[in-house]
Length: 334
Image 1 (cartoon, rainbow, N blue to C red):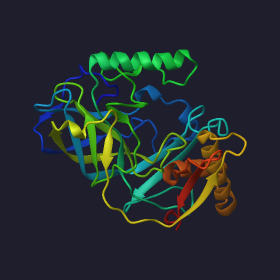
Image 2 (spheres, helix red, strand yellow):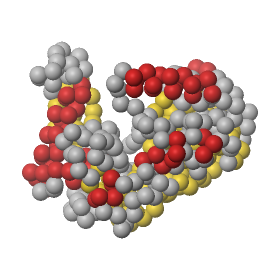
Image 3 (cartoon, rainbow, N blue to C red):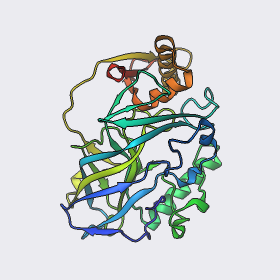
């Protein structure tokens, strides 16, 4: 297990292109929230321990410039998960300043919680963090880029080297943001049957995976999904056809049936073309809808949105007002 991106972390295993393997992972919060945890425990966990990853997996013969195809074959979940609202973190951190914890019991491929009575979320598992190690040059470039964002007053995750595992990777990159080599993508379509394409940056690729989600809405708005421990079975395929390589990860999904949904929308009528404002309007409207129709606490509704509501860019061209939609799947209600 490791929780930093660093090219010098030695591989845990070496495989050939086309090999299948199963990797077991802790949950994305490193098991710090349990069945005995309370809301206040969300304020005391060490977030620097986040995203413990299984790996690295060395793919024999992989070289910089190649493309690594990750074929997702199967997921298995533990019987417990959490969705946490952390003070100061999340898309609506200014509205929800207090800690809140949803504890999910998982049985029969369904998650239920006392904090959200009447809700039964079906399994839709995927890995939130998937990536390959950056080279030392690329790691330095990423750090320079993110330090520049910090110096300009932008939000960048603290490095927290004291929480790095292994300690030798303390100078490595936090797993909080996604980057060109993958990472915390939180793409909920990376389910069993999907394929992800990653640009190889170091010899052997050094692939890692973790942060399994039992379910998540597009946007993961409070900052956590239904976070679970579990396992993922994958096959890794090496490609030297550079037509598959792009600057950022790309992916292919299996065919999937639709779900009935109720949706709210956001339109930035006072802030022309501002997608952030449109998204906040759609999300706040969905939270208000859940409070009014299901009598949830607003913060519990916020957590449910993070677990199941999909944010969509419905249109961008009808100037001066784009539309963002928030889709609530209706099958989560018993």
